[in-house]
Image (cartoon, rainbow, N blue to C red; front, side, top):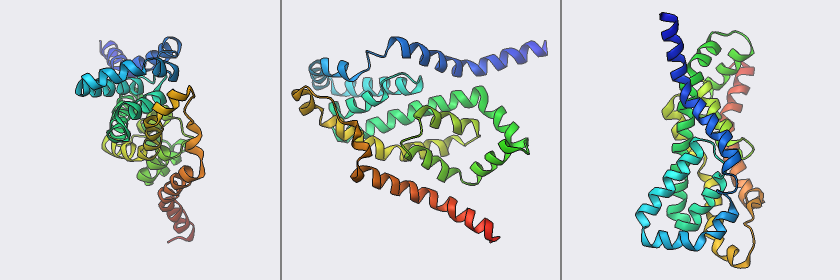
Length: 242
């Protein structure tokens, strides 16, 4: 009886994570063309008319859809960020985008921690091997590491959502670093979205490569350096025995 109860409890804990994985797989097949730049371009006039007639509801609907896209790892997160700028401007569009992305990311975090995180973190804490050393290193620099993961454009968003849960990061710390860490990149993409009207008029596609242009990338890299500086100082002091 106890074994069956434990098995059911284990399955129940993993259901949210399994739902996220299933939704991500299905979304990759069935939603790829629906949450795309072309779809946004084709429906832009109807979206703008709906926003003008129902601004509050449009904002809430946008937030809900963006949260679902991120929480279930559906294709189209970048398009949603652009749409936030297109529909609501840089402000409040950037705020909407950051709030929705943070909320959706928190959903994945909780699903991963409920399904795997607590047990895996406990095993890492008890391990004396490489996994244990990695866990100890992250624990010693959690704030800095979490900010770096969010700031560096090369880190996939899904990976940045799941790994902290597997390493036992506290929820409040995850939420704060996620919210603040995604602000720079989100503001840049939102500003691109705010200029989509002119892009649509010319029949062009937005230049997302702006994120890697020096005037945008260098400030972000500077923030990465500031986040990494405490880690580097701790490492240097550790080597010197300070």
